[in-house]
Length: 317
Image 1: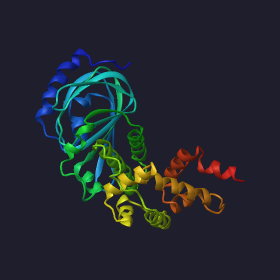
Image 2 (image 1 turned 30 degrees about the vertical axis):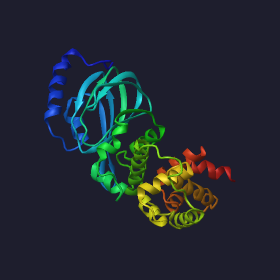
Image 3 (image 1 turned 135 degrees about the vertical axis):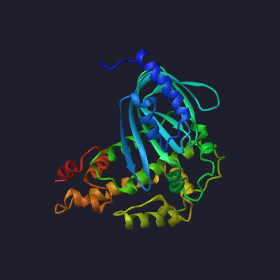
Image 4 (image 1 turned 120 degrees about the vertical axis):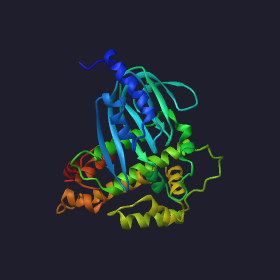
């Protein structure tokens, strides 16, 4: 049975590793995680292959006190299984919280941190390189990303939206599974915009413009015409004449969902219509509707309808 805490025989190893963490320079958070004291914890690593590569880590942590060096990546994580107290310090003193399943945990880029976990927890961690954050946000990307994400530093309460994206990224990055670059970028971009919106000061009522009827009709026409292909937020923002960040914020406030979720729903709606055409295979329908592959199609369809495409087709007979 796996021990519920770090054995005394490991204490010296961890103490030395903590000191090393603060002295070494690591290229990525994934490198740090494998080469530091965290490397003693059971863990799996995957790569998210988008425009630039991000890292995913699934780790079984035990009780510990460790230090993380500043790394030029945005680190976002959520506990998959946890019921313990923990503390963190990112330069503003120690703060205390309860590590709960589905909570949002953020370490801003270039921010060192210390952690004290009072028990076992299972985490999924995403590390996004700063150049990718800048590229996906576009021209209006904040110049000081550390300050922009600082309000979320540490634990910020439950966030099922982020937890859902991390689960999806873990799924599509499975070894041997084809990854469409645009799908990875869309998911990470949606996550970044969501975090920036959560971290931003509350805007006074009436300061945010909404979609006009003309904007919406133009956007819907464009998406319907290109639903079979890639639909990055950059292109959607260009249709309305807004910046990526402003578009994503206005879209969510106006429609109650992200552009990514709206597009997936439209792909599923088109797939429902095509499932009535018996001469089309599920793989062909997946491609016609812009899904990365049949697996992506099935997962998205079942999430929104409660049925697999095949069951849906059979039910229409």
